[in-house]
Image (cartoon, rainbow, N blue to C red; front, side):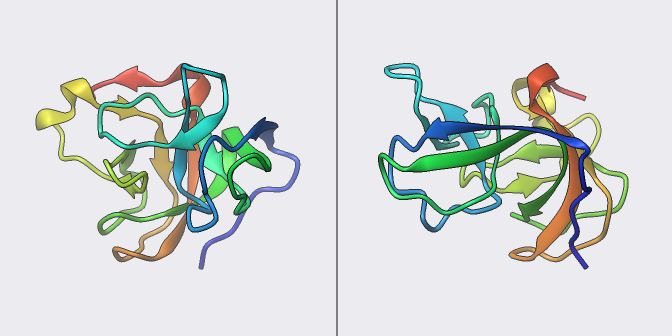
Length: 132
C-alpha cells in the first residue's frame, strides 16, 4: 500500500510548462528556457522532484523535492532499492554496476510494487547524484 509521510517533505509550487494532467506521481524537471516544470523525458535528466497534482499547462504544479512521497513505478520496485527516473518519468531500480553512471540516484523505495503501480518512496532530488 502506497503512503506518504506527514510533515516530512520539502514541497514547492512551480508553473506547469506542459500538460501534466496524466503525470501525477511522476518525476518532473526544470525547463531551462523559462523555469517551468515539465516531465522528465530521458533517464539522464536531473529531476527537481515528484509531481503531486495533475495540472495542465500554465497551472500550478505541486512538487515534492525532498521527503516521503508516492511514485509511479516504471518496473518492479523492491523495498530498500535505489530509485532512479526512467525516460517516461517513472521510478525504476537499476542493478548495482549497470548503466547507472549517467542516471541520477534520487531516492529509495520503501515498499515492493509491480510495474505501473504507485509505491511509497523517500526521495532527495535536491542532492541528486549520478550513479550508484
